[in-house]
Length: 80
Image (cartoon, rainbow, N blue to C red; front, side, top):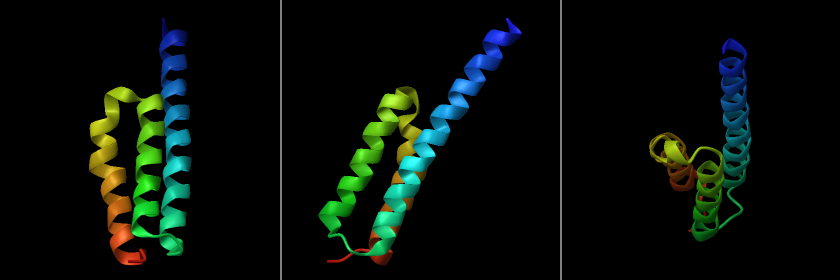
């Protein structure tokens, strides 16, 4: 039972790491300022799709934390 729980925890951590990499890449692209607002919004949507595949029951947290962070970056660094 403990091995199974440890495996589930390890899987959840791996999923979160994968999602963090996707979000970090999207944030870096947005910060570069080389993309239009529409393209930058596409990065948010792409990251959200990854989140939906990795942990569909946690999309509310994605929207609350990551999507808001990326939207702030668009406002700060985005092209018009």
